[in-house]
Image 1 (cartoon, helix red, strand yellow):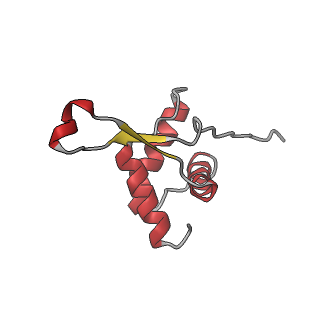
Image 2 (cartoon, rainbow, N blue to C red):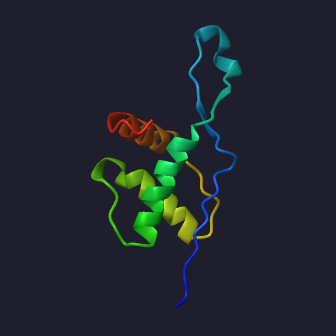
Image 3 (spheres, rainbow, N blue to C red):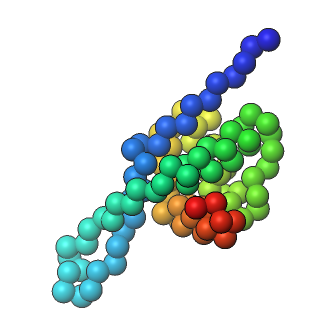
Amino acid sequence: MNSIRLHLKFDPSVVMYLVIVDKLLQRQSDLLKVKPSEKFFDMVREQVISHLIDGKEPPEQIAGPILNIADDMLAGREVVMRSGDYITLMNYAKSKKML
């Protein structure tokens, strides 16, 4: 029996999104780098593996972000977590007391 191994790699656990700065610094906008905890990525890995390997649908609250990540993986693209997806996943994890 063949086994399927799935390795998820997030580069390097950094999510970036635009920070809105005050009027004096509008021309000098910068990116905010956030490094989520390993527990956060464990939750994401679990959901993605459950969807891809077991065929289970992710919880409705986080279906969009999980499907975006799975789509990137299946297409052979680098997994890029969009800021909205990150916020949705963090809110879900916090509401379920996973973090």
